[in-house]
Length: 544
Image (cartoon, rainbow, N blue to C red):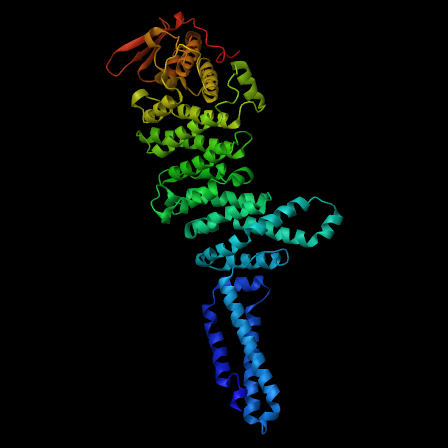
């Protein structure tokens, strides 16, 4: 008759005791997943308690019944039913422990409330474990939140017919804003950078643009750059599989994300003031990856990401120059400097055949009216390069200035010193730069700032052998600068002594002779009489 017993009473009580004893080892992440499925710890423990009672009752009936054979079906049924509950509860618990939860329209409220509870009540280690559940659900979260935004301004009838989707969307939207928390995003990019980077691929699968997701993407990308312990920091100069550039490619090399969720949050990154902990290197790597992705995808106009990159580069250039002035030493930013050169090269290749037949007036009007004839990428690239000169000009000391190596390296890349007797082959970015420089020098000659003439006169130097007939890009630039410098005598007459504000060490202006003198390191000097300049700049540099 013992064969009737599936479990003994001791087995059932032991199983129940173990279940309650290991409660302290159940991690909050498992409790979160239970709540997503609409279950609770109390329900599971109640089922275990019920299974224990069934097994114990079956044993009691077998032990105390005078004729247990007559109760065979009842005893066996109670024990089998109790055993089934044990198996069901333990199997489901194992499933929850292994399988991340997933948000759907039906469980969105439970998912969001459970995650919010976990984020508010548990420690950082438990927060980091959420990334697998988030990765499993992010596509649905973004999709539902995006559909909610589209339905928000619809009619009351649509709201009623889509009320479940709208409710799920409102919770999804709130969750994305909750996740865009600085501390949480910093935690996940440091603890589990690869899974965090994989979120961007999942967001692409959603195929819906969502404003709340934009905040989350910006914060994650910002923390990858700001945090010195992030996955991106470990990928710089990577060696081996453990530091492969997965984060860089997934976060900043995804064209869909760059278009719909621009990851480089310029405003937030500009607030970050510490330029000494590798921040500039990480920013350079991220910006270059984003820019090269845009160029390779042919996205050269109407790109918010391109303008973000321009703002970031200009901000960092001004910060570097300020530090160099304060410390009177060159800032170690070689990778940043190289990224500007690389950015220029790939932009030139991308815009090589993009309406190079502009004259100056058409170029000026096209940029002014933003008619799309001049691509944004060319404008942004030219703006970054001009900022290299502008940021260094305020207290520029000539060849001995801490910024000199950066300024001259980038200038020589953009304006190589090549002479040509044929029609000049000047690329679009050089044309935009020449236009911008001409306008700034003209403003300088009226007494306005920034004093870019300080830097430019050192860079272009005096005309070779006193001639201004060089038709290369640097020759054309030199023509325009010296053509505008003819107004130096007017500036000196209106504001005596003001001309010296636009000269650096080694370059002087002599008002009595209307001459600019360049003094070289060996003590030799060359003078250029401005009154004798009568060369009119070529057609595409002349601005009416």
